[in-house]
Length: 566
Image 1 (spheres, rainbow, N blue to C red):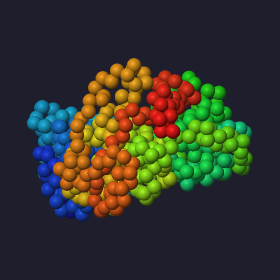
Image 2 (image 1 turned 90 degrees about the horizontal axis):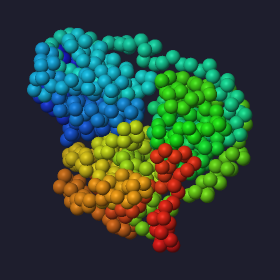
Image 3 (image 1 turned 180 degrees about the vertical axis):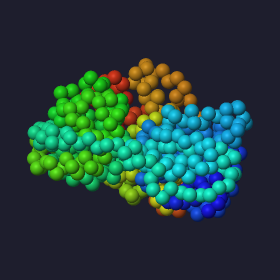
Image 4 (image 1 turned 120 degrees about the horizontal axis):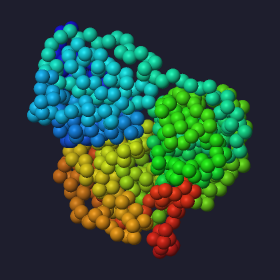
């Protein structure tokens, strides 16, 4: 069938099963937007290109399918770049389609031209610069193949405006564009027997589960494996939700703001089975003290991660689901009762903050919201103290229900990502937790929520500060609060109302409890400005450069607050 390049894009997206796309029109994508007018799927108009990428990211994380975003050339692309880098760091499958100036103008510093291809290389899994209409169908098909295969990631298709307008025959490839061997790395599972033997003999084994568990759909296999040997399971930030956090074997999150039991277990373990994790510095703490004396079995789909940060005893290269299933068949099931009793004792010795606190503080806020919500709803955390409070206090029982920017740590991520997460579930309510600082970085997306009546329920942990930086200044920089505690004076409930979103404010727990049922039951979006004390810290905390075992559990400030409340 003969059609324009722009129409080919729409046809390709439909053939790939795309349910919605996110973007903003501009000069170099006018032909594409004209074709989108007749598309069989909706286009969600956001109010900043970065938000388009984050919304596509949230859609992908919640659904497991590639998210799609569209931007114009020049500033449209540079705005979207942070969102692509966010997805790249966390291995999220995206397809980004950027407009470009006409082919004969590329490299001439034309109006709204940028080196999209060159600028993207460090932030995407692959980039296509389409130079002819004949290349376009294979580039689009290949983009989806690359984004979703192996270790997932974002792929860019840069499409000049003259190719969008050109006409030709549309032949969409029926089979794969790339050979399977190029898309999916070769499995290397020769170490399965050795790994099984190490786990059978171990007295103090620990599983460290990362985001690869979720991306591979291996949550059930992980639970069955852990239960078979009664091995405690710690997760990384990206692995949260990959193992039920109310499970008796769950240790919670490990790392800088991880639970004491997770960090102590990794410190005392004699064998660690790390699966689908890349050993971020926020997970390991001081490297020369991490897993000191322990044998490490490292399973990952990306061979480049093996021995990159932490030398391993047994490497296993492959999909997490395959590794767990194959290893489980080689293990008889010797259970580690004494070890689980020890990790259980640590849970009792180091409880997290009490959710029954009578004041409006993070622990009580998350307790009330989680009890009133459905555990199927996606929970999206921004970056900073609010992110770590969400990770510690909001228990995730299912995969793909906890979303956050882990590797890049992008403030402003939560609101647009929650939009995408909600739309991935046919307007499922999505909970968005953000600090007042990060929220202001993409607050314009309140208008998107209002226009489409997307049921994003925003809970603003408002401490009138850039809280995480302020916490470091308090603990490590002699309380010199440079540029972190200037009270903004923003009336967030009024701001929400100005955008067409119902806004509420609360200073007490009683006020939150009173408005919560109506907020969660309402069909559209809502914002709740929760004013929490500025001095609230996110604890436990492993100081930068310290070993995992050397965590701060309380401070003089927190001890004073505990004494005062008692």
